[in-house]
Length: 127
Image (tube, rainbow, N blue to C red):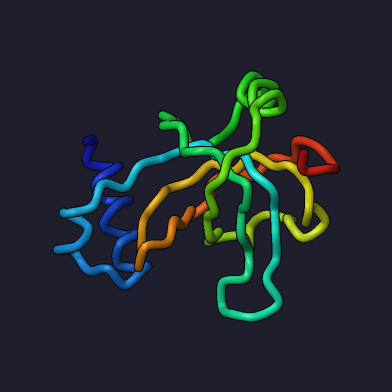
């Protein structure tokens, strides 16, 4: 793992309240996920990706047009992810839509979470 990736992992771990010891035990990687954007009505972290695919490892934080085109044809999955760091993206208009999200994946209290670095709209319906 590169020094930059290690630093990002430790930073994310601290943000998530995991502490350095937990960060060393858990591998945090950049992944691409396709799913349905949902917003819960309560809670501090209301944004979810439902019917999501397993995260596909990625080398970059941004998304290329080729990746978007591949994701449009990807079948939905059965996983749920809680989305973090959504403030930089205008995601609210895409509730209920099929989207592609790229970010750092972490498990916390048995829940999959993505600290997103890229958000791409794929289709107006989540099918």
